[in-house]
Amino acid sequence: MATYKQIQEWVKKKYGFTPKTCWIADVKEQCGLKVRKAWNRQGNKRMVPCPKRKVKEIKAAFRHFGMI
Image (cartoon, rainbow, N blue to C red; front, side):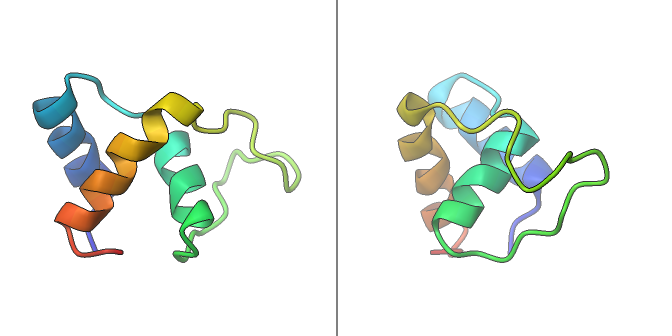
């Protein structure tokens, strides 16, 4: 499984933006992948969910790394 840093670098190279780690975690959760609870997360609700317009690119990175 790819690290968040690897995913960020791949998305930046391919699509020109760096996704926030909270966006990556949100999309991982949407795909049913295992996610640990962040140390700074408050409650069970994501404070900064991934914008819908960025989900496609992050999922492409997951496919590239064989995560989905």
